Picture (cartoon, rainbow, N blue to C red):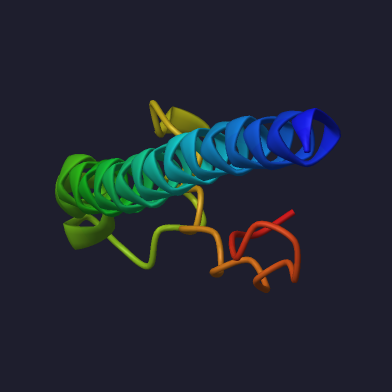
Length: 91
């Protein structure tokens, strides 16, 4: 009888620990998604800023002869990475 009680107690403790780990994993995954959205927003803002900085030079001609004078090379926003099966986010 005592062995069954210990087995039940051990199993309950193990299940409670797994629930805690799963809850923490879900919270971390939500934080990862939030940070990924924030990263994409910052990249979009950077792209818009680079375009605004380049507009005065583009208005002076087709841009090719003015390219050496540009302060920044335009960097296109990255495509969304393919979701990973493990994390749900890109690689």
